[in-house]
Image 1 (cartoon, rainbow, N blue to C red):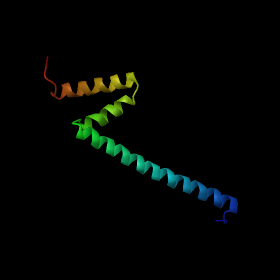
Image 2: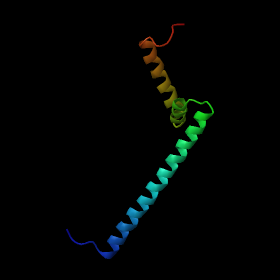
Image 3: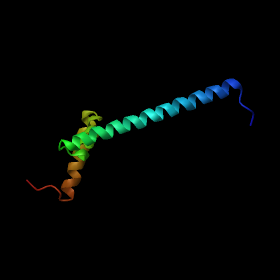
Length: 84
């Protein structure tokens, strides 16, 4: 393989360094998120449920309703919901 030109080498180095900085920022943000979940847990909130709420808030209303309906159907089929 041919030796990269000086420009290509510097461009590659710049890209790799940007990715490395972003990875560091991502790790710092992940740590911040863990701290907020720990704070929520300390206030008595259920972290699993919070994560589920956050996931569901990312969905649009139609997707969320569809997922809830499917979950309800499966739970009824498995006898996990008391009959009304």
